[in-house]
Amino acid sequence: MTLALTQTDHDLVALARTGSEKAYRELLDRYQRPVFSLVYRMVRDRELAEDLAQETFIKVFNNLQHFNPKYKFSSWIFKIASNLTIDALRKKELDTISVDGSRNAVTTDEVEATRITVESRDENPEELLEAKELGAEIEEAIGRLRAEYRTAILLRHVEGRPYEEIAEIMGIPLGTVKTYIHRARAELRESLAHLRMEA
Amino acid sequence: MPNPSQHLSEWTIEQFAEGALPAAEQESAAAHLAGCAHCAAELEAYRALAHALSSLPRFEPSPSFADAVMARVRVTPPEPRPLAERLAEWLPSTTRGWLLAVGALAAPVLSLIAAVAFILWRPVASDDGLGRVILLRGHSTLRVWAEEALHRAVTSGLASHVASLYQSVIDVPAHSLVIALVVLAITVPISGWALVRLVRTPMGKRTYAN
View 1 (cartoon, each protein chain N blue to C red):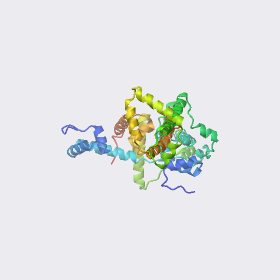
View 2 (cartoon, chains in turn cyan, blue):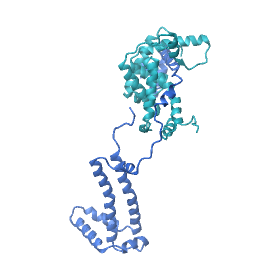
View 3 (cartoon, rainbow over the protein chains, first blue to last red):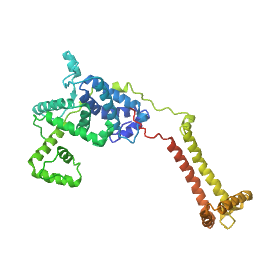
View 4 (tube, helix red, strand yellow):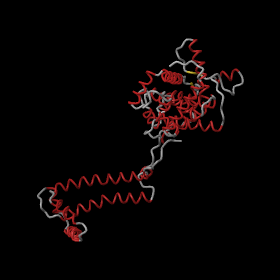
């Protein structure tokens, strides 16, 4: 059985409920990068991010029978990912960031094994280096935000989620979401004031 | 509405950039931005930040990620549940639910009994096929009871409007009453069922897994 790209998340959930492993894998394929990226940017530790992202999918998949189709599947999975991540952050303070390997890595092999792989973009080496530097600065600035601001700004600007959905994911009022995002932007602008960014 | 002599707030600029302002404010902000270099620069800075954020790459989990997840997921088709268990789902789970369910079921039954009694009591005034058959087969005792009950209701003075309602109903042709009965027989149980389902629906509970 082939699962068409046009199938909605809800179709896939319905199929998965009937025991279709392909449907589970298609959902994984659709959401593993967004979920992992969000979690990784939140905790800034690759191993922990992998654990939390896996935990998210396992929790979602093992509770598919309780999924209410009234809600978006994406809201549900991001909500669980965000709750698990914030719980983990509360348990453990994580302040460092590295896209070049886990902060726990000691040997060169460990650094290489835990290095983050990003989606390739068609840019020349110079542009790539510039983008990498700018990206690293932005990642650093995001990492300094409060966890709630970080979640909100990442969902809004990196994942492109509407304000209403972010409110549902975070379980907070719409007005609070707007305030968080506004403050996060203000802090980011302050942190990145020395950079030349183009729209 | 922003004051043309003052700069727009950061909030207004952000909302403008996202097209989230009401039409009139959006227009007014656009007019201000066209003539205010400071606010235009603020807007440009906002757009640059939004662009930089949306250009951030997505990170890839390890290649074994999907398999590691699937190894811990229970992929089993739901087993068909026993009939008794499925039936039990339809039964009320609380005393209040049972009371409402009994009430909901009794309502249509009582309505039907009352309607049948009315027809049996009604004088044979129509030569309509089905109506006539029903009327001719009516039991005289039931007819007397219904007559007595109606007499008491009217003479008690509690419901003089019942008499006029009765008069208007009695003038209705028999086949209309049969149609009304059929409609009643269909709609009242449906409403009873809906009521039972309503009582059984958990209120204010989300079905999210967490």
